[in-house]
Image (tube, rainbow, N blue to C red):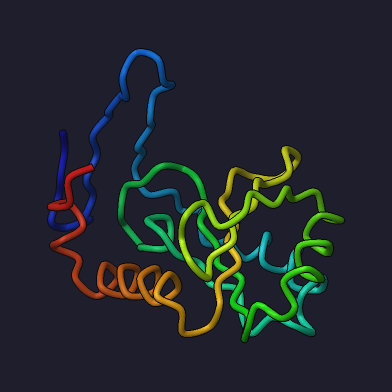
Length: 152
């Protein structure tokens, strides 16, 4: 384990039980913001008429924070009304709809293999799922010291 209050880095390698693959946590990647922007700009034209925004959430959205090297993104929509249309549009980009995975007002998608590693979620505006994603991201962005205190 390594941490530095100057750079707000927390680095620890963990593994799940032997039946699962290893979880890799790496130092903050300077390319993560650019990767998010590239993915956002690729997705946005397909959803811009029904989506409100695409948010970079999760640990990779926090400057200086170590994380799994997987971008987390939320496509924000006003209501579930356009869900079938958006699922179809994302499908045309190569995304596979995985359902809500037990979380209300949040739909998960498996990313296309030809794109950088990322998780894509479709979240209803003002939903608890979206509020949680944004609150954790924003808290970590403003409270550097806590970034290396969170157990992985």
